[in-house]
Length: 424
Image 1 (cartoon, rainbow, N blue to C red):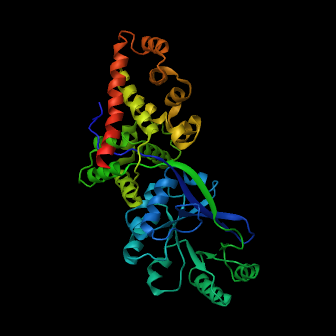
Image 2: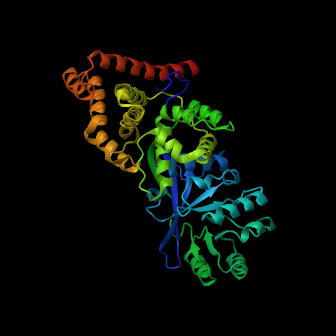
Image 3: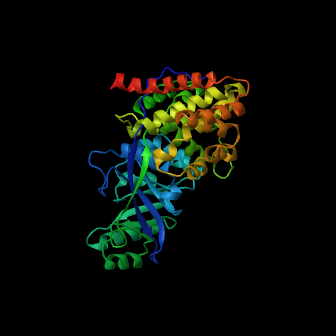
């Protein structure tokens, strides 16, 4: 049974923003998209945001929940990473072939970054050096990266000379020139041997918006605390993830991304946590901390999800720990359609819930589906349906078992809200 002594906030639904700018080949076909962090409808990098914060928020709010393939329409992705994010192995949260990691022009600790890039390249990761300016400090990285990005300078001959110099030294490296604003610049760069092109002449960054649910800052702090210990307690991680819809959604999406084509089916939160392993969990929590996530309002939808999840867990306990954990996950996921503004069938597919859990969510099939339907019947005070479902789920139990389970489950949800009021 999950510990109900909670000191956590509850996430709220927010609108997230991200921009993508296409990168074109010499024939003006789209080669890739660069994904850019935004915090509002204003299509500009937010003032006062550090590279580290932008990296964390881009990873956590977009890449790990929505998915790179959807953000780039299955095109290649270029993603900026801060020095700290590289040194903390953030790329390992992605499949090696899913993105090109851009080393930003404000990067420091170049020797350490070079060493980490060397190690990550051996695992199949691809890198670009952003806004190269010819400074000697970049020398350790030049022979490691697969792409070098330049910005257009005036007169254009300066950019052409640097481009040709790089081509002579590193014939296998692809050169991308940014901030191209005229057809003349494009033609001159193309004749100089530029491989790929980016700028307002082709397309401005396109704003994408989507609904998201942010994890609570108290959950983040508690996860930070338990992952800072030398020996990771997977059960404690599971406890905190299970109490936060935002964390649950991202953990499941991360498992989906890391499993690749293994056709892995997730049936419980604890299975997802154990599958990821110690290193990935620690990296995941560092992303959380770097993102500075946190909210100031409780969500009634999240309270409903927690209550429903705990009710299902209690009702299914006679079937064993595995069955009750699966019930908890189904209950928690059953409110994500409203929170994320997505259809449940899309959620079931995106989070690799498998046939058993998916059919429970979508059609109330099986024991899990019947218990979810029972939870909803109690919420709607449809007692005639509740009695019929109880006969299917726990035929030897009196109706009081439903009253008692829902009472305890509602207390579980209420304790979360009470903790917010106390800590506000």
